[in-house]
Image (cartoon, rainbow, N blue to C red; front, side):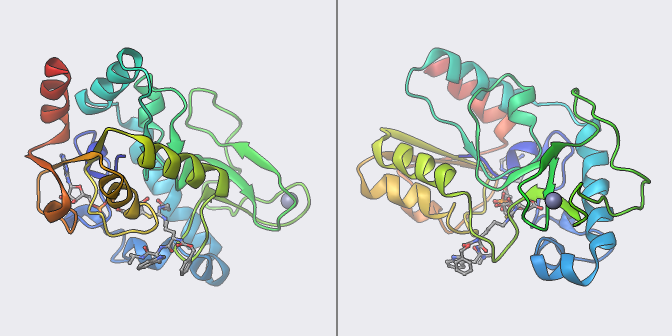
Length: 230
Ligand code: BV8
Ligand code: ZN
């Protein structure tokens, strides 16, 4: 399971790092349904700002090492809290995106309409004027296809991740502060089920005391080194 830390070396701001702020708004202020109801234009400006950064970012050696491990090890499940799509761009398949993807928009009115947004190689037409709030064909607003704080995760995805955590022998927790639930519960579940929990992080987290092995370092350096030994 990866968090924002694996994309930090690709230049993508983490949530809690010093660069996690946008115009002095913390991510927690903007990544909520309340913020979108209050000011959808502001929330879209924030997501477009992040799309701008992510669109210029490249997968780093950490993403690439996980993609290679997935192709070499049967029974390798990759789940991420990141919405940046960099794992897929690194060649990883079947990535369980627990919190959605910033390159998709869906109907905020619930008609079920979902579409890709520009920036991704697929390159659908842009989301209208740069400052506009995109509108669904049903007339409701379109919102980023991500999971906001206070919103439940997609049941099928969390079920897949829970099953993989329960059945794994080794759980790699890479670049996550292990503070956001239910994702933060997955390495604990794996540990309770007998797996070796390995934390890869430049810093201490609430997960550190529970980890069987702690590799303190940058994901883009530790993962390629780990891959060589597996
Ligand atoms: C829900 C998408 C039902 C949007 C995101 C139980 C206990 C307490 C609270 C709760 C709980 N259950 C539910 C909650 C509430 C809440 C929650 O967890 N709050 C926390 C803050 C206390 N959870 C929810 O609301 C979830 N929904 O549970 O629904 C429900 C609802 C209400 C009440 C009960 C139940 C929905 C959570 C998903 C929110 N959406 N993202 C978007 O991206 O715009 S979360 C978002 O923040 C990210 O996706 C990610 O998950 C999280 C950030 O965490 P990290 O990825 O770990 O990043 P962070 O910056 O924090 O840390 C980076 C780490 O990397 C650091 O440790 C750093 O040291 C390290 N690092 C940095 N550089 C490197 C590195 N490591 C290695 N190499 C490097 N180079
Ligand atoms: Zn709609």
